[in-house]
Length: 315
Ligand code: AMP
Ligand code: MG
Image (tube, rainbow, N blue to C red; front, side, top):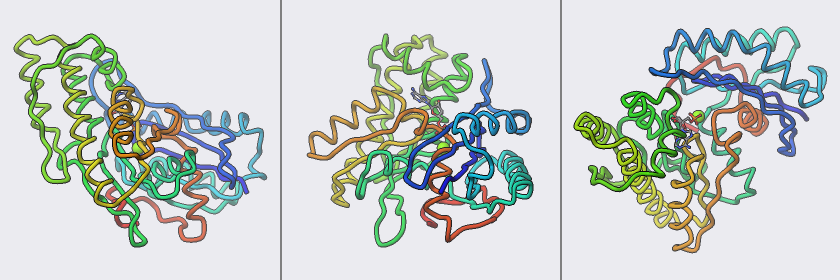
């Protein structure tokens, strides 16, 4: 069976094609970016409309398949940016009608988790999902996903992007912050862990104030990474200890950060656990993970339209 998956919940429009054995035949995407300023919903809609057919064509070509080979179309039904979700849904609805393929709407965070588990051949991992919007520590217990800890306000990625906007880095800022951090030294920032949860908005305010006072970008980027990654590592360790999980997988775009990975790697090593991540092409928003989740859910889901506030713990 071959599954075509389509991602469009936020900045990325992606089409992935995978087999029922988890082989990724194609994973093509295009992301809305800016040189300065953040993500504007109207521009994201325009972006998705503009690139959809081109991305589809490239994916089919790379996978060396035609529509006849595709069994189902899986799509990201939410959560996400409402205008982006409806735009993407109209596109997959059109493809579904045109090529007579069943639609399978799936939960976007669940797709991030499933591809991380499949790619690393894990049994029962603790998941750390850190993307633009999301920062969650998740485990599967008693037949459902449980959020063990999460951000109480903005996601870690969004916080990096907002700080990046303040210092003129454009969107997405994460990779540029990682680079600047290599030349920075530590200055104290608020450390905001509340029980199993974390909070980033106070840190963002503080770091914006420090920037206004003339502290160097490098020092701020370094300190921001050290502080926020340590917070996420702390709650992840506590979740692993509590649930007795021996595997950790990091998913989401912030998972590309080498310093973050090395902190988590060290924590896992210290407790005799395995740390894994996934290649950036599968860690970030992409169509291949949507295709794989659609394959797993092919018998339980269908055309469910969109759901912009769909939480992982409803699954
Ligand atoms: P996603 O929503 O999963 O596609 O992830 C996008 C987020 O990942 C954005 O907030 C980026 O700034 C962030 N990101 C991407 N690369 C890095 C990196 N190397 N370090 C930190 N954050 C990153
Ligand atoms: Mg995502």
